[in-house]
Length: 268
Length: 322
Image (cartoon, rainbow over all chains, first blue to last red; front, side, top):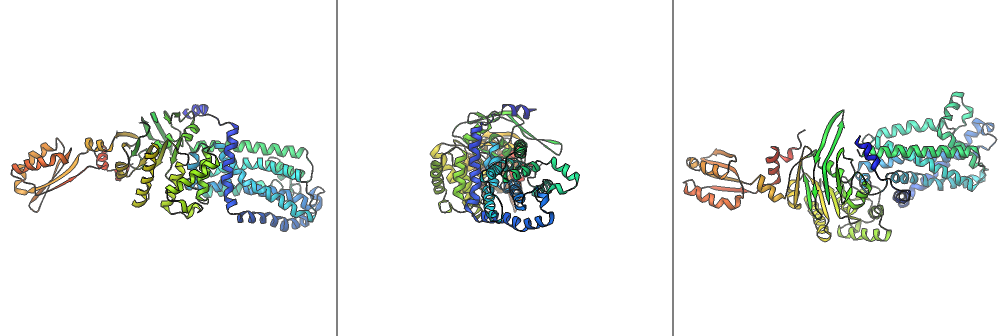
């Protein structure tokens, strides 16, 4: 009861402060890859491996008709970009785990930074390399028949960023809940990630699957995200893009609510 | 600087309610140096965490640096510094980067933050390590970095949770030297927790003894010792003369216990003597006059451990015996 009345009198930080705090949290996290750029170089190789080794097999095994008239590359590349975003932002909590074990998370909690900025800043750090990665793989693929629409791709990356804030916040909450039991974090993250990924048609077209899979994919926010990215990467903006933006926004809102609750629960 | 009213924290562990802090009232004036002393699990850190808004009180209220911890926790955090039990620096970060970002978190601009970081690195003997990653620092260096992090924004009120736990004596002395210098220069109010009685004794002017979530004593270390413990006096007299001074020593102990051990033809009496150093010479003369001259004498000033023993019947080092 006391906790309830407490929550009501809590001063809400204003948006300007959240943005400023987010900038600092993001910047602190970015210092890690910037001070050690090798990690960035390696992160560029992974998507190229997927495109180079999985792409050709995909085209040969599934056959062009399943891709709705697009080239295999045009269909598969946005999926790879979503996949990188998925892997990256769902790891937000894993970096937090180290800081939970030492005192550095507590030290940062004791600063005036707003709680939501802690999550958003960290999630955006996992998303930021994606901008470089996405643009680079798009450029690399041009000689192989990929048609590059820079503004559409940029819009796609922004939608992924919004989605990433939500997934990052959920990952953050998961790390807090599984504090002192690190294996739970990995167990849950891995167990959820792969079914969500497969059921969204990132790797293989869901249209080729049985009906129950198609139905299940309708309840997966990732499906709408992938469809939006495919539409955008193909150079058009339509219903899929709007649905994707909506799915990303809902994920962000849910993620932040869950995340802030997890932080506050940790404090009581 | 700090005012609490019936500040309480209860935890539910496996459906059992544990009262970690039971309605404590604390007042700390600006510039004071206060130590919360008590065994592990006594509620010191829980109290500190409520005052720093890292833990929400179950009931009661607290005003810290003029701000209510429940109504405006971020406002409290902006006005205080906190050095926790763990190491504050992120393992993979560079020392200088963490310090500058800490300053930015508190709203300092980048020029000020960089200048302040350099100043602290210098005064905490970390200047050569600015570009080192935190994980490569030694334990003592990390602790000094924690102090630097806590001082980046020059808080007027600083909380330290078990600041010197696990440090070797040299590093402990070093750490305290820095904290004391800062206090002398800026008049910072300092509140710390410790379970090292000698630390509370030497470093703080005021000791708040906490046990089982309650404040059981609150005074200067000197007064606590004088009022609650007194000096420990041990005298030895020849066994055949012992009966002559029993009454005398009993009166000197003023109602306190007098222990006796007989061995090798002597009897060793042990008793608590308030202001022992002042009274002992006269007592020796009285013993001499009574025909039982002291063959040896030992006078030990009391420690805060003696105070704790007197208050709780337990030794501070034995822990909270829960």
